[in-house]
Length: 166
Image 1: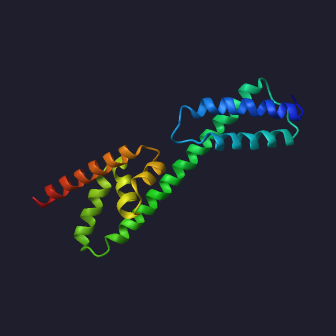
Image 2: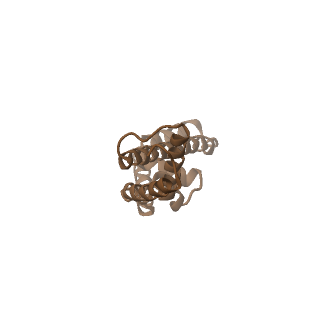
Image 3: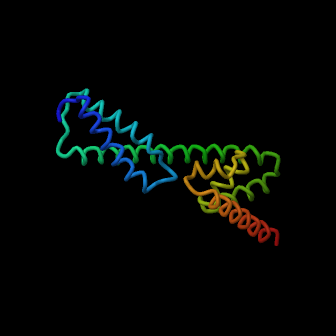
């Protein structure tokens, strides 16, 4: 299989579809099969263009390419999530500019004291104006989980603010 022909290309396409489907079935909400197939096809074409032959079993080789493509996608999503959360913190700082310094510091401390799983959705919703569906897509969780985290975050903030007033 060192040469790329129309026959081997169609065989690889079938194999890529089959293997990518198996991997993507494990992550149905967070990964699009077509994206994986496209990434693997590009990697495979680069590989053949470089004049390399496939080491060992084609199935194992393609499974490795699919795995690396998934890892790349998840790393990109994690980077986007961190960037959005950082942006939300910047917006949060600007939203609190009108508060007196003491109240501002207290509010920031309360929000920063929340666990990241509750702080992230609150910042994205209230500061960036994102809807639950958008937050779910960004964080890779369900819409119901977003609502649950928003409610829990608000409850914890409310309790902390009430305790502070006493």
